[in-house]
Length: 196
Image 1 (cartoon, rainbow, N blue to C red):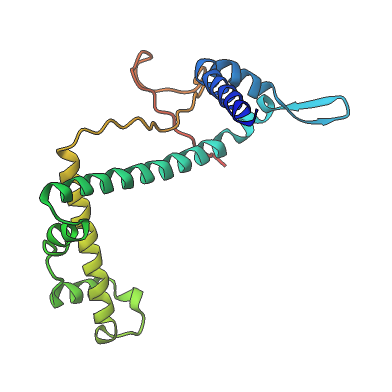
Image 2 (image 1 turned 45 degrees about the vertical axis):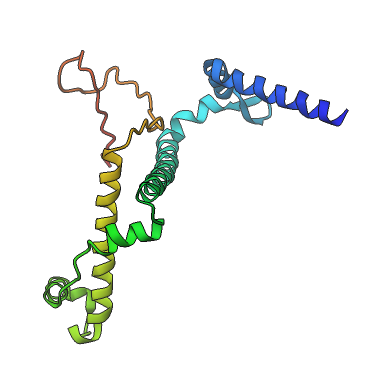
C-alpha cells in the first residue's frame, strides 16, 4: 500500500507541476485575487498591494536572479575545468597551477609602491614598510583572480553553452508618460526617478 501511495503522490506533484507550466496565466490571476487580510468586511488582495511593492519586489527578483546566475556560472566554470583537466590527463589543481598560478606575473615592489602612493589615504599613518607584505599578497591574489577569469573565458569560448536563465522582466505601463523617440521602437527603456 505504501509504495502505491508514493506513486500516487508523485503523479499528483507531476500534475501540479504540469499545471504550473501549462496555466501560468490562471495561476497569476489567482495570485492577484488572493485575499491577504480582511478588516471587518473589507478584503485586501494581492492585486491591491502589487503597485505599492512593485519596485521592492523587482529589486528582490533581481537579487535572486543575480545569485542564481553566479551559482550557474560557478558550476559551468567548474565543469569546463574538469573537462579540460581530464582532456590533459591531470587534476584540477594541476590545471589551476599551470593556467593560473604559473601564468600570473609576480607583483613587483614598484607595483606595491605605486598602489600605496595612489591610495595613501586608506592607510592612514602606516608607512609603506608596515603594509608592504600584506599589500603585495593582496595584489597578487587580485592578479590571480583576473587570470582565473581570463582562463574561464577562454574555456567558455570553446564550449557550447545554452544559458536558459533569464533576468526578471517587469511590465510597466507607459501610457500618458513623457517619452523620447519613436513610438514603434523595438525596445523601451523606463527610468524610475524620485523628484522630491
